[in-house]
Image 1 (cartoon, rainbow, N blue to C red):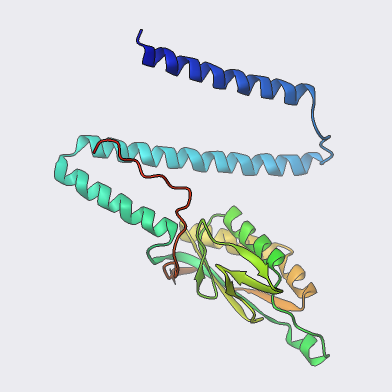
Image 2 (spheres, rainbow, N blue to C red):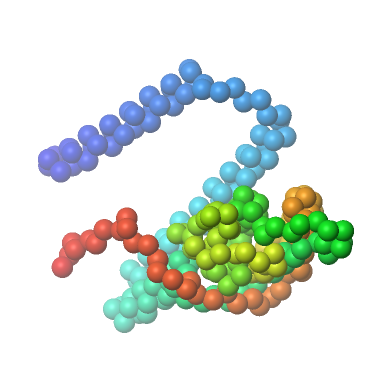
Length: 239
């Protein structure tokens, strides 16, 4: 047995030992008591199972790609790699994307304006909650007033103004585009948002949230900015 294999076995055993000790400590000494009812726990479990299924589907897709790559000649391998690069560029926002989805419109509540209520632009917290729920229910790509959301996007308050990608969203009228994997998932997202309490939450802030029906073709532009690569390290192995 070579030193390289022994080293790998040692590292794996060390990691497994840490995982077992952490799990044992968590079971023996829970930090907080879970006071949720059974339905809340079942709902969270259902969501985790969906996430697990999605990860398994992604693993299966990448395994299929590896098999295709290994079974093809050099020319076909180059085509497969180029297609994969194009797909990854779409995922991270470097290319525009088309697909089924829906549009949301946020506008000031007209009846409240008539009675003299002050209409403030949407708060970062409310916008973040909405975006998280969209991603939770199978939203793949999101654009807010022309700003494409990526893995490095930030929604935050800067000097009292809500910003997306550091661009101010100081208008009370906002258009949100969403693209999903399939039209069926777009309809599912529409049904969830329409039946949720989000519209009430927006109305409390003197805003109307309009949820348009699912569409078969929506276009979201590429990210208009520079993606951060602060934590990427170039691998020169094989050169």
